[in-house]
Every structure is written in structure tokens, then in C-alpha cells.
Image (cartoon, rainbow over all chains, first blue to last red):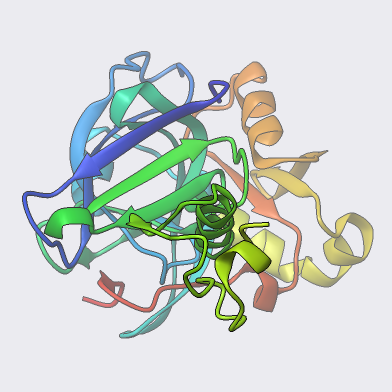
Length: 191
Length: 79
């Protein structure tokens, strides 16, 4: 895997599914197929899947041969299905080699790849809806914990200790302190 | 494809689990060809041995309950 790589995918507005195009190829050259040029397919990112899945269409198109079997439990029942090794080419040249994927009959919607927690667990993953536009971003490897609680606390403490501003409002020295202590700002956080 | 290899694994599962729990087994023609620490290592070994794709099985040696993959949406397996 490349050191520190990332991509962001943005929808036009609010999205109810996280979608990106993903290139797929064999993991390494083989005797029957030496072509490692990835072919692009539409993928959906799904935190409700423990592993990644590809459709029969990809298996046929890339002439993939199985390397194993996977026991699967879906909403329509359980089964044993073929497993393949491939490389995933995510947007912005984020490459994940040797991904173990299971073949499914179909995915609802016009998708050919379902990206599961096996890929998401390789890095950091976040979804935002700023200005009513859904974006999701993914980076590998994991660099730090994404913690909105800590972010807000840091921003608030910084603004209070700045002495004069809290959420963009100017605070006078004789005003009540925004930390809700009941004391004047000059006797509390503004000391 | 790979039914023969998969059946071999299932028929010898108890013995293989007791010997190689957590490892990846490379099985071909009802024979254990090698034991590896990762699926990638097993695959690379298969290609170094010039095993044709589709003729060998890489099987993680784990209890079935630990191997099962779960999908809560979208995936259709029994069409």
C-alpha cells in the first residue's frame, strides 16, 4: 500500500449512499492473464458489510479464477461462494493490493462492487454534509482518531481563552462568562 | 471450481484446525502444498510454483463461525 494516500468523493447534494468508481485488476501477473490494467466499476461503500463483494459481471469481464470459498450470510440467506484476489484502485491513485473479495449474484442498485469494512478498516473514513453536500473521504493508513467531540472542546476552549470572542461574539470583561460559571468573564476564563 | 480442494479441507478440517489454526493453507489436488502466514503469501507461493489460477484453494484455517462474512444490505447471494 502507498504511504499516506487519500481521496474525497462529493455528491451534488445530500446523498443517501456513498459511491465511488473503483478500478479492479488481478493482484499480480499470472500465466493466463498478464494484463494488470484496471477496469473501472461503480462501487458502493457499506459499513454494514464485513467484507467486500464483486458481481459476476466483474468475474466474467476480468476472467478471474477463484482462489477459495467464503461462507456468506446475507439478508436473503447463507451460502458458500467463490473468493478471488484482486487489487482495488480507488480514486486519486489510492491503491489497495491483494483484496480478498467474494462473488455475489447481484447488488441492488446499479453497482458492481460493494466496499466493506475490510477496506474501511485499513484507514480513516469520514462523512460530512456541509452546505447540504455529502462528501466522504478515506485515507490510508490510519493517521489519527477522528473525534468531533474533542474538536468542539478544543475550539471552545481556544475561543474562551482568546479572551474576547466566543462563537464569533465579542465578550466584554464585565459580561457573564460563556462557560456558564455565573461569574463575570474578567473573574473567570478572562483572568 | 475448487470443489475437490474445498471438500478435502472440510473432510480433514478437525486435523488441520488442530495443527494450523490461524494459518492459510494452500491446497491443490487433495494435497496440502504449504502453510503460510497470510493469504497474500500463499498466493505468491502458488504463482512461484506456477500453479494455474483456478486449480488451487487458499483456505484460512479457522472455525466456520469465525470465517463467515455478514452482509446486512444490498448483496444477493441466492438468486
